[in-house]
Structure formats: structure tokens, C-alpha cells
Image (spheres, rainbow, N blue to C red):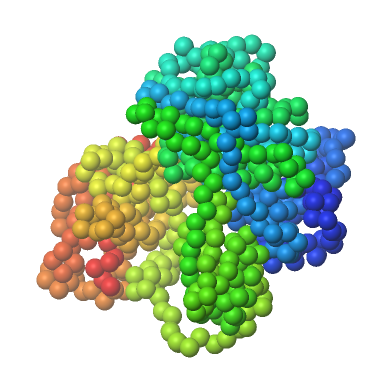
Length: 593
């Protein structure tokens, strides 16, 4: 959940009322929020960096408030205040609309060229007019952008937001893509111009911007936005130009959002409407959100921001039954209105028409509206009742079998390990002397690290890495794990399936094949499977590249292969940075359900 830090005194001043810490905590709970921490800038520095660093820091009380990840309209002080005031019925839910340029002139235009198709093909734009910043509103405006970048924009991978002082630039604006060496401008907070390639090297050590470099650094073309005079506004999603930076004196703002997904880029609508909260109170009557035109490479012209409302209709009975209350349609409509969802009874039975504002992108289905009605009613006010339908909970058979086997394998002297479900391609292929194409592995499309590229197809790599991390422990090391692996399966609707497996390893100065073989016999005894070729279990010699030649056996139960056991190949042992022989068993336990 995102956390919003607000100054307590500013918050109470905006709310027009003072609360004790306990009273405000209760108000947050009623509104579906959580007051996570009461602190100050000085306390934070003392805790994180020590008392010396905290000298001179502010003692102003800060409230850290946890906001639901879907409520982007509450990610700033002003949005939070407006939501609470509407909830407390001190204000009506605001209405938003865009306007045409006041002087009858042409709206600002952003032209997208076809070169952007390979990097960030989408963009939207808007204009904010007649702004009056204070220091607090300016800081809140900047913080809001960062909160949106970290949440709905997915750390700028989906959407990058740029804000510019419109009075320092002139349209129409061009959004294009060029080779890094051809882009040259002075970025924010720098004293000279750099090429895009130089900036990528410069920011590799920047604690903030280095996290975004990977988004475009391997692309042949970098996205860039120019004004009509060739001035660089920004190089999304990395940095804005210094020429058009906003300040306390800024009166008009040009907003551009570039993205890889057209649906997500419409979050600019959210940004604009929240900016109404961020920068202004109701007495700034001259403030307006002005439309901007976006021209696509195929000639299409769209007008933004899309401050569109929509209406949903649902019955009061639907909400009453799902929430567990008994309220009239009029009362439910009032509850929804308190959540910034203007509602009224339609006059046809108990049907309620709910108007969804552009700030509430989280409202998708009727259940989302029902949830807001429950929040406004108060979860603590819902009368506890006994369910009309009784069910008896029970473990899934595979989980019950897993728990029973875990207890007995631990009793046999083996220590349970719990390893990652994701691993690198090397772990399940090269290190096990296998070809990645033969593993039926499910690949992660956008892995964040080379250590987590695929879903594991075997439990063995995780156990061997665990032994490698505990080599200094007394020998022998006897580990086991009973967990799921993931395998491609075209017969499944998602193209893959989970498979519950048991894996155990024995690491010592001698291979200990007899220990692993004895463990197999014990597991089969617990499963009530007797030795035998037809209705029982047996092993027979087999060849597997992971195991030492002539020291591997395939395990059969009721005529079907369920796994392997044997002494691991020396190459496998060395690739996992181990130095002593190791035996292992890997079997599928699902056939025994």
C-alpha cells in the first residue's frame, strides 16, 4: 500500500478541524485508510542515520497514512482532504470538465512521429492555466508525481509524466525518437548540456534515476520531446530539460505523459483531476484545465484530457445482500455520495444510478461500488450474523499428504528447506547438464534480475544452493523439500500446471546412495506401496545427464515413472560450488493421492 506523509498541522488546517491522534486514527479507519505512524522528520533521521545527522531537522509532526493501492486520487494532501471532507459531508463531490483556450485560440498540440513506435508509442497532453503555487502546494505537486510514478506508472515502465512551465516554451510540440548521440540538452539540476548517451553514464551512479535507465538504455532510439524552437522538454522516462522546469512562479503548466500502453497512459486524466486538489482550493476560480490535441503518426487526432464520467445502475437489494445490511435505496445512495460517487434513486424500484467520476479509475464492477457502500456504512456497524449455509473446511488431499510426509521425513533425520519458486535458466539447465528447451520451463517475460528468470522445474537446484550457502555446517547435510514445480502444459487453459514433488539430498564425504535409497523405501512404506513391478514400486538402471553414469536409477510405481535417484554428476556438484559427493532423490507424489 502506498504511504502518504502529511504535516499534521497543515492537514488539520485544511480540514478546518483539529483532532486528537486517536480521533484521526478512527476517522481514517472509517474512510478505509490506516494511520500507520506518527513521527517527524527529526525522528526519522535519528532512526535511520543517527542523532548527528538529525541536528537542525524539523520537529513538525508528520502523519504517515496508508492509502489503498487503487485510490490514486488520495495520494496527496489535497486529495486526501477533499475525500475526507466529502465523506464527512462538509463538501459536495466536485465535478470536472476541460475547457477550450479562453481567447478562442488553437489548443496546444503534441505531434507523435512514427519513430516512437519501437520504444514508447503513446502520449497524451494537457494544459493547466492560472496557477498560483505556494511552497507547500509546489512540494505536494512534485510528491504526487513521484507517488504516481511508483504506483500506477509502475516505476515509469508503463507511463512517464513530464510537467513544464508553458510560458518558457512554445508549441506545437513534437514527440519523436532519435539515436542517443543526436539528442543533446541541459537536464534538470545540471550546469551544462549532455548527449543522451552521456546522461545514461552520468546517471548510473544517481541514487534516484539509475533505477529507470534500464527502460530505454538498450534501445537504438531514445524518446525525446521538442518544442517548435527545437528546445528539449524531456527525454522520457529518464529526465526533463532544465529550460522548462516549473517553479513557484509558474502560472501555466504543460503536461505530457508518454507510455507503452494506451489504456495506462490515460492516467493523465487522473493526474489532471488530482492536480485540481494539489494546487488549488475553491477560491481560485480562474484556474482551469485546458484541452490539448495529440496527433498520431497515422493522422488521427485525439483531444485530452479525457475527463469522462460514466453511469452504472445497480439495485439497493444487491448491496444489502452482499454487505449484510438492510438500508433503503435512498440511504445507500447517500452513502455512495459520501465516497465521491454521486448517486440517486432512479425511481424504478430500488435501482440506484451511480455516477463514476474520472478520479475513480478503480471502480470497474458493481462489487467495487458495493465495497464503497460498505466503507461508508462502517464495517463495525454491520451486525454480526450466523451464515445460513454451513460448510466444513478440509485440507486439499495434496496438502494433507504433504504435511504427513514432512513430519516423517523430519523424523528420519532430514531438515526441511523452503526455496524460491523462481530461479535462473542456468540453475535448471546448464548447472544440471540439461538443455533449457527440454525442461518445459515457464519463462518470466520481464524478469527483474537474472536470478529469477523462470519458474523452477525441479526442486534440486534450490536444495543444492542451500547446501552451498551452508558448507561450513557439520557434515552430513541432509535436506528435503516438498513443494510445487511449474511445468508447461498445453492442455491447461493457462498453458502451465503445478506439480507437487518431493526432493531430498545427502551431502557428505561419501556419496551415501544407500541413505537416499533407504529414504525412498521409507517414503513408500509410509504411502503403503509395497515393492513389486506391477502394483508396487521398483527401480531400474537409467541414464540421466544430472547423475553420474551407472549411478542413476529411475523409480516406477504401478508401472509409471515417478522420478529418479542416484549420485550427482561431478560437474553438477562443482557448478553449484560444492566439493563433496552428493546423492539425491526427486519424485512426483501426486500419483499417490
